[in-house]
Image (tube, rainbow, N blue to C red):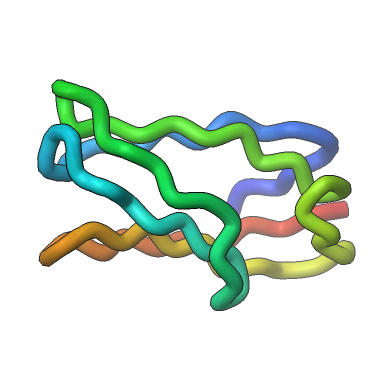
Length: 75
């Protein structure tokens, strides 16, 4: 499981180009991203700006029929 200290860069692919992708952390909407022409999205995770306390968190990306999730830990 990735550990995030300060900022961490998220890169994910496989989405439909030009479509919105909802990024949630612990079930709360963090951002709505738009997939690039290649179907990728990027996001800079900054735990302090998102109000994330130290511990384990669930990150989920969802768009139309595609949902991806992972966990990460903040210190």
